[in-house]
Image (cartoon, rainbow, N blue to C red; front, side):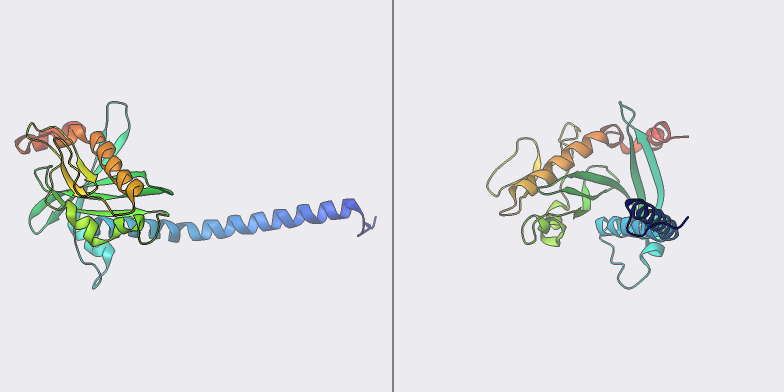
Amino acid sequence: MKLNTNSNLYTFIYSAVMVIIVAVLLAVVSQALAPKQQANILLDKQKQILGALKVDYSAGDPAEIYLALVNDTLVYADAEGAKTEVYVANLNGETKYILPLSGKGLWGGIGGYLALDADKNTIYGVNFNHESETPGLGAKIVEMPFREQFEGKHIRNAAGEVVSVAVLKAGKHADGQEQVDAISGATITSSGVSTMLEVNLAEYAEFLKCENEKMSKCENEGKEE
């Protein structure tokens, strides 16, 4: 039976066939590109961690530089069972711990990595990223003038409690916390960075409170088998 090309049935069948063909093609392309996409995601993560370690990878292969420096990943579970990761690097003979960060800015997600010295208290470096913060304002969290303020700051108080680092407008002060200046005109994004640090560091509190002389014991207790 020959279908009437002007009929509703023909239109329906034609549309259904085209949808199926397009869906199959998209699935094939997606599968073909998946390994490349995953590789790009991994490389971006490695570059961000190197950024937190203040390592210049522009003259070499970032993946090779990363693998030469970052030699371990510790996995911990907090009191609610949520898993967190700590990356361990050896930089010029010194141990650095790199913690992933994630939070919310003004228009979307923000994140990054925080590198700590072996004392698990002194900030060595930070690297922030964002999805859609305002250019020239909130987007400045990725720039060195803002990031450099965190270097040398401490995330614990004199009692050893994890208190984070406050991001505040110039002239304002936080009790019991070291602080950095917020970005002028980007109050919500700056507040988002401050909250992100506070919330994320709280998730690592058990790991961070382990003293150096108990380091191996703490790692063995926290690491997943």
